[in-house]
Image (cartoon, rainbow, N blue to C red; front, side):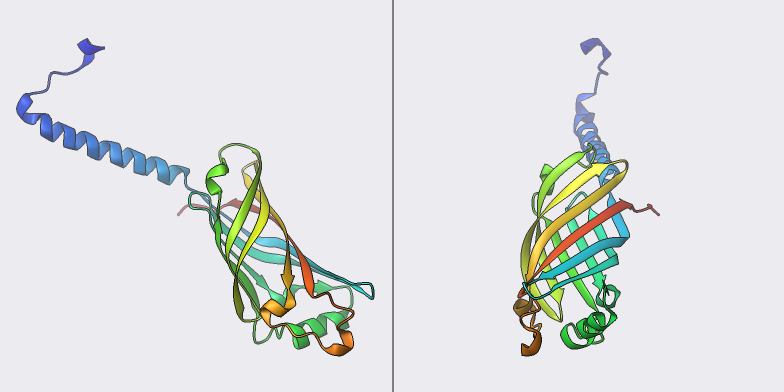
Length: 201
């Protein structure tokens, strides 16, 4: 191997070393840029359930948006409240007008990070347990949350699943006394999404 090394003039050693460091740094940066990838969806599925001895209420929204940066773990979600569909039209009307005031507060959002993103190998298929931390805004109220989830890597996509609970009182969602026994104080939320790579410009 030594026979293959070029002979470097002593006076040019400093310049050569600087150039070598610059080239190495550039290659590392390009490598990071190539591996970094954002994933996106416009059809995330968000479902919630209110289950009491008196009544079970379920609603599904299939048009949530989500963006995930696999390098930093940064993620953002947005759900249009009016897109939740109920079995009963009257229930949907009450949900939007009386509880969520969706004209005034049209979206529910989450902005945060996968806390343990370093544990996820986005270049290798598999299932990874993760924890998301960040700020969730519902009904105009923002709270810090931490929820468990699962990321499944495979077939060029990233699938995300999470189950967690939301307390109505935490987001100033008032439940009228006449229906208080019909609506759970904590709502079970389930999130499922398949994110595809965003096209580079």
